[in-house]
Image 1 (cartoon, rainbow, N blue to C red):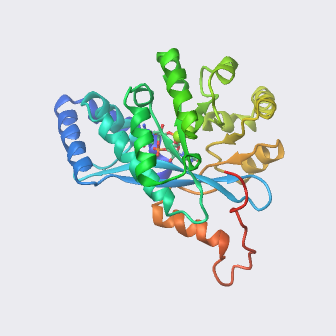
Image 2 (cartoon, rainbow, N blue to C red):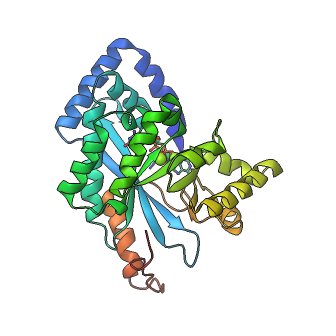
Length: 293
Ligand code: C2E
Ligand code: MG
Ligand code: MG
């Protein structure tokens, strides 16, 4: 677990490596092979509702690739490689299918969120791929959520709006990821059919330190309430941060303090324990079965 807190450093380091053309070509080839051999992995990071015992509300699927020679490569490095080398379609298909299959094994039934890059969401074949994957897996559409960033909306607004409409018509949720990092406009929330707002870690980090950030945080929560869009605070690393966002009435949280990304078997165990706490833990089971996703 040494890599957990060093992801940003890892990104910088690997981005330098990837600048080397030959290295990049080799990486693309290795990625192609990894896709063929089913050697990629999805890890899951827990998302919790910040009321009444903090029940699990969902899991975010995070892509992991262990390169045979270079070791763990961060998604921010190999996703651009996949894009450049025409592997993005394969990657989307693999991730969606794995996430749906994994979600079906979650008991109690729980929402799974999948990250979709700007290029992926604007790919004309995505709506059909999504539809077919849901049908083939049998996963109810409302158990799946896509996380997209504002970048996609800026690249091609009309197309993004159209695709998002199609996804929402299928019953799939759409979260606005990285909200509050850099540029964001309130108009985005008015125009696009988001079902969740994910407040970026950089923003969460500032709330406890400056008054303006706290005021904006409160305003976003109020706006979310008015628009009926739940707000999730990302990157909660300390008990203080958790207390703070909870006190302000933020609906959901995610971050190392609530749980690190973990293999699917660990995610399943964490869910099971909400039904049957491990012997001697003294906790009452919390049923998440009846609460809406
Ligand atoms: P993201 O969607 O914002 O995901 C959250 C990232 O923050 C994850 O990094 C997670 O491990 C990390 N994180 C979670 N809690 C904390 C915390 O408390 N502190 C800190 N410092 N970090 C935390 P990861 O897994 O390296 O993913 C980075 C980005 O790569 C993701 O950002 C997402 O945009 C992208 N990504 C991951 N998986 C996929 C995928 O399957 N498809 C696409 N297109 N993008 C993906
Ligand atoms: Mg995300
Ligand atoms: Mg995020």
